[in-house]
Amino acid sequence: MLRIPKFVRKSISGKITLPVSKSLANRSLVIQAIAGQALPELNENLSNDVVLLYRALSGKESVINFEDAGTPLRFYLAFAALEGNGAKWIKGSGRLMERPIKDLLIALEQLGANFEFESVPYQLPLRITQTVDLAKDSVEINAELSSQFVSALLLIAPKFRNGLNICLTGEITSEPYIEMTIHLMQKSGINVHKTSVGFNVPNGLYKPVNMPLEGDWSSASFVYALLSQAEEADVLINNISLDSVQGDKIVAQIFESFGIHSTKEENGIRLKKVPTIIHDFKMDFKHCPDLFPPVLAVCAACGITARFTGIESLKLKESDRVEAMKTNLENFGFVLKIGEDFIELPASEQTLNSDIEKIIRSYNDHRITMAMTLMAYQVPILVDEPDTVRKSFPGYWQLLEELFGIITEKVAK
Image (tube, rainbow, N blue to C red; front, side):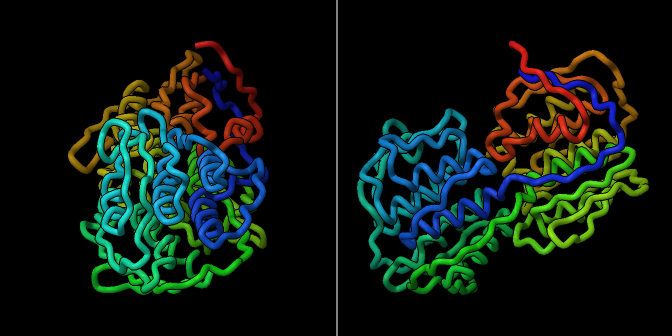
């Protein structure tokens, strides 16, 4: 467990370098691997998700274990179904084995791939026994459960001899992530055409492109959340842009409502706290589900009425994020109502303002961990699984120490 003292410093300033966007890095790695380019050297500013995909694509491991990394798994399944992986077993943690991959595997089977399953059909552990048939020219995929299924197929599409028509069924989820994939493909020399039913990708070769990867906007959301509760804030994030291709840059717009103003700087953006009054907040998270935990935590901390919709896919993430946030916030005295695809938070004057420690339950989910640290403005907290932040923001605890002048302490459970 990790002990985090109550945040006493209310005036926050400094300079922050965020971890590299794992969404951009993972897509770039797959493109480089398909193009036969040497993979770049790993650096310390990469999330664990990126490291896991890097190791899988390097082909040096006898068993490929993706731990809890859903995006790398899905991208690698398509890559390995295209290129082969020597029939190595692909495994993951208990939660990853529960997360959906069936629709992607069925789509790859349409393209000629075959899989062997250790126990349960269409679930991990599995291995690829036959690669796709490059003479195929069309595939159908359900885009409702995960945009990553679509991105995985898009990334391998240029290798098919006659190109590939991708027909989408269901209502598309997290569409900005598909647009990010297309953007990187086009930067690498592959045209992607939208059709009335999906996408058409012609046959082509990825060209080497040296694309510097910016910081992660999803991780930036936790910085915004922390600053929103400060009395004063003036912080420079030096490796993200308001013109980013990342869909989660919408966080800058969202947090204007909570008093954090973003301005473009030469090498990043500056965040400043400005006076604001907010009584209620509504948002649909269908296309930016990763922002749900920090925004809900901020609404609770502000004591405002909130209603969130578009949360169905959140039940299939590293945890059931709706239930995880509800359980944690109820432990702090907040009352929440959950419906089939909504969650409501009534206005509250709940303020603990105590020196008695409260436990944060991470549910093995990095975003739950980071979102709930916001409660340290009210009470000292104990985080039961602090290492979860390695998945996307390895330096998060160090950042807290620097921003708030605190010392975190590991303690036994």
